[in-house]
Image (cartoon, rainbow, N blue to C red; front, side):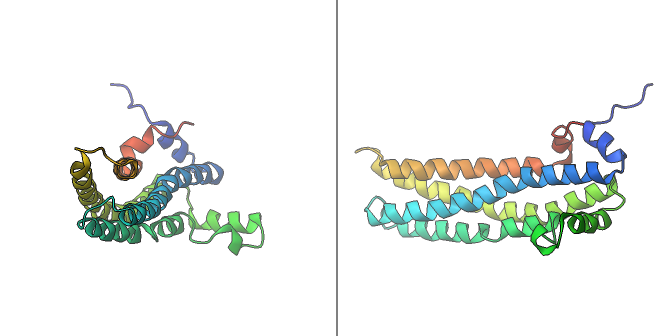
Length: 195
């Protein structure tokens, strides 16, 4: 029997080389932080769109519930980007006098630049994000149900664009949550990094 093929990510981590490890962590931080911060921005946009829909009389008295759920959802996305960033980069570039000082800090932090350190990083991110996702996803589902009820109330006369916008944003946010879950799955990550 031949040896099992190793993934590009595993091969890169087996090098135990700081430059390679830094590049992987940097790329992964950008990959993960983009959808996490996108959820925050989308939830803030939704708060404003719900406020406008309510002011324009596009939502029923149940719309107050929609507004409350949307504001609550936005509150739950507010600080997550910073918390994720601190797992990757507990000290930011602005806290160092030079790029060399920055790199020296992370050379020490990530020693020995191997699979065990990578798995610990993934574990820290999963420990933070999986409970957060388990909290956010039902809120999004509840919000989608409220939006759908508002849309259903307008079907006979035509659904206002603002309600369709809310429906689209909420659906996109659920898709982003699924993407974040995928980025936390070691098996899916293996294929994302090419050496």
